[in-house]
Length: 256
Image (cartoon, rainbow, N blue to C red; front, side, top):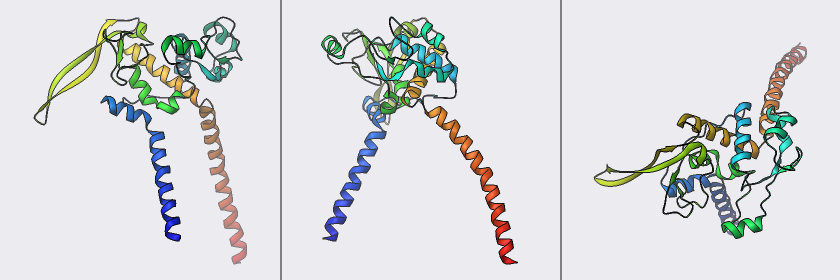
């Protein structure tokens, strides 16, 4: 009886561990299947200017198809934007500052037109991980064999066209034959093609800003909670000093 209970608990523990591994590494699995090494996303949630630029990019280049239903525009005041700035630069049509970041396209229509409704992006950085999103946005290339004219090294045969093509331009796929352990292997990479509105350095910064904002949007309270945590730890460390001095004084009286 005890052995059976032990085995059942062991199996349950293994299942839990396996589920956890799957949950924390979805982007790694996708990138591995595509044979692309993930690039590290330089996320910095303390950079308010980067987050503001990222919010502007998200509204102008992502919200045509993707919503962020669990994020409200007025939350962007936490990034240093005023409500007037939000109204002027980030709102369209009849949207209000207190409205969630929804889109006009209905899920049913999106599914009919595209075959699948584009996912909500509120917590996309938590589910796919920042490094994967950063690599994905830098891995698009022109592919005339595809219906939409685009493909992606990190996500082969992707069904989404390049959302930032106006900024980056039309990158091309480069295939090289290289020798590895006596075998010839094909190495694929993306190189600059027809230029867009931005230089390579500017586009890389834009991708950084956008991914930075996607990370923030998934946990908008993280910046503030980190600051509060630092303050709390500071006061606790001061309290520890006084408690230790009180302990010394207490035991000095007992010894005497």
